[in-house]
Length: 284
Image 1 (cartoon, rainbow, N blue to C red):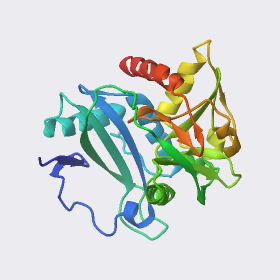
Image 2: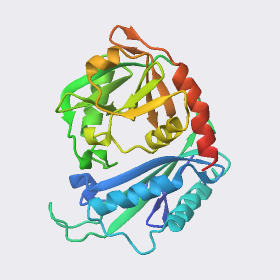
Image 3: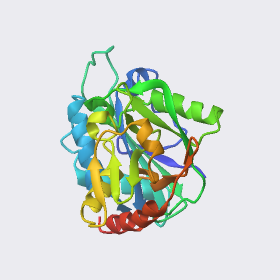
């Protein structure tokens, strides 16, 4: 099936050559993106994604167009879904924003363009994945423990090389570290560690992505008396003492890590929280 993409409000065939070699996202990674679910024309956690995008654009000194409202972008997303006849499906949307062409490191303009892509997903709601999920530390390169690392920019070369490392060594994922040798996140999401009723996750100061699913899980856990959530530094040694490890992002929801080195982990807390995350998603 031929899909349509939305480039600055214009619907184009997905094989259209609407970008060129001067694109600043290609040249310098001068770009941001958001990925999220859309279910029955409802954008899951849309306000959170929109506000994160606006905040990130300001940090990168991008000029936010006057019409770049939450309502405008929602209409453009739904227009793209309708053009692909996917309104009754579960959709994965990638919204990319990049600074317009011109300049070297110093841009000639701070004006931006956007692109919206849609892809069908199998499940309408977050489901628990029973597939074994073995991870290892990726120590070839480190994440910077600064504000820039928390943004969803197109500078994901560590994640790319880490993914190749995982594939070459028969791992399903890798855990990223910062220069202080602290746990930051995994290749495709945030990381949570469970010890009994205590749950820990690396703080934003570690350099982890300011994840939307991470935020929702933290907020949910604070309302549950049986759990205690803490944003704190985690060492690789701490991981081997954990009862459970799980990953969060806006697309998969929650996924358990089943093995790290010789340690195999439980999955009970992740299974408990997946239903709670679905309930939060349905409430908006």
